[in-house]
Image (tube, rainbow, N blue to C red; front, side, top):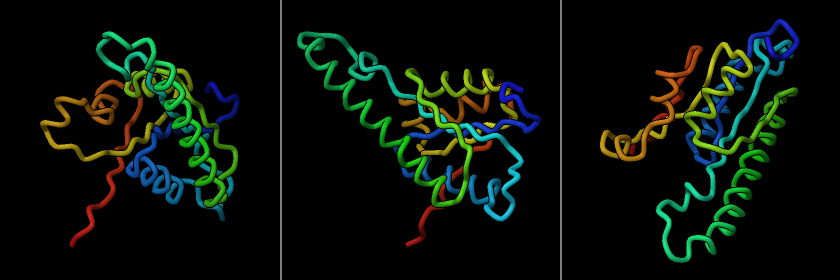
Length: 162
């Protein structure tokens, strides 16, 4: 193991969505219970910060002026994701989680982190996009389920019945 101990590694993908928050809370509630502090996994929480240039999209007049503002916003979002993950861990009395931020596409970053830490399991939330949105935006959970070199758990937030 890359962690230096004998515990298997769990990687949890985190972004600024409510689905991601739910997946992290769900995972901590089930695998990191406070009354059993000898957790079964070494926990890594990973946020993939998009590259400002790729977030802006097609280059055109004025792109160079916009990129610094987009980058600042993406850094601010990454900081919020890290603080929220820390807060959730603290609220659930989970200690020792490693929170990492990498720049790039979430699909690739999560698969790379799984390989880097020799993870046994990857946990990702599901946005629940339909087929058309998934085809246009791509699905991080679907990509990871097919490309990560470990088991992948996709946590879906239950729909609220009206």
